[in-house]
Image (tube, rainbow, N blue to C red):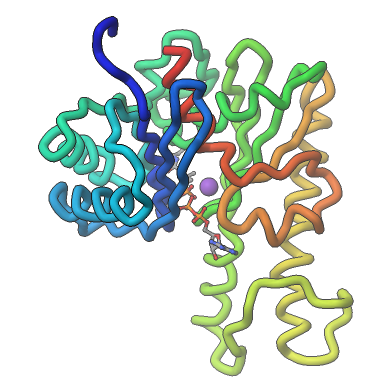
Amino acid sequence: MPGVPAFPLLAVDIGNTSTVIGLADEQLNLTNTWRIRTNREHLPDDLAMRLHGLLQLTGAPMPRAAILSSVAPPLGENYALALRRHFAVEAFEVRATNLPDVSVELDVPDAVGADRLCNLFGAEKYLGHHEYAVVVDFGTSTNFDVIGRGRRFLGGVLATGAQVSADALFSRAAKLPRITLQAPATAIGKNTTHALQSGLVFGYAEMVDGLLRRIRAELPGPAVAIATGGFSRTIEGICREIDHYDETLTLRGLVELWASR
Ligand SMILES: Nc1ncnc2c1ncn2[C@@H]1O[C@H](COP(=O)(O)OP(=O)(O)O)[C@@H](O)[C@H]1O
Ligand SMILES: CC(C)(COP(=O)(O)O)[C@@H](O)C(=O)NCCC(=O)O
Ligand SMILES: [K+]
């Protein structure tokens, strides 16, 4: 919209566990990023206070425009209200139906998670000579987002997140201790903790590698694989099928999407 100052741009990626927030400058560089807990109970005024608190704490400028992606309703709507009421900013909400250049090749395109559409934009810079990219987003769920050159969202996989798997096991096995999800030294564990870490971390990495091999076998050309999301730092070095690790891929995707509307 001509005449409306658009920077700094606020980008908000609301996941089921964390909300990742960033500010981007006119060159589309992220100047600040924050990661806070997602709490679906929060009302618009709670969200405005948290946002204002973060900006003040960092001495960051107030946003002049905003883009939101939410997979945790009603938080997308509540952030939009918070931004309108307290920051005088009308936020753009990511949906399959408001992205004209994207072809979502799914049975029900509008059912796709907004974060997965952001990942499509975040993955573009990794395509290089590849026809396809697969983003593996390790969050509450681990989703594999299969992307084709020309902004095609081709489908993917939704797998149980590593922490959710671990929590399910601990809640059903009375004698098992809660452990940190980190790789043990060897696959053969000599104690309960290491044996659990082997299953939960190495086991998880094998699942991811196996699914990536299957996905690649189904695609007609080579695919680059990029890991992102809360658990990706732990797992990306263990997986053999992942080519790149990018902590802020989804947030950058939001910024790229905003710029290319
Ligand atoms: N700083 C961290 N280090 C290691 N694991 C993390 C970290 N933050 C989140 N996680 C793990 O990542 C998962 C959640 O990822 P996140 O990206 O926050 O999810 P969502 O996209 O669903 O909000 C959980 O399994 C959590 O244990
Ligand atoms: C798959 C997801 C649960 C991932 O959310 P997250 O783990 O990042 O919180 C989310 O993208 C979602 O609710 N998707 C809707 C279904 C779909 O994308 O097909
Ligand atoms: K995810």
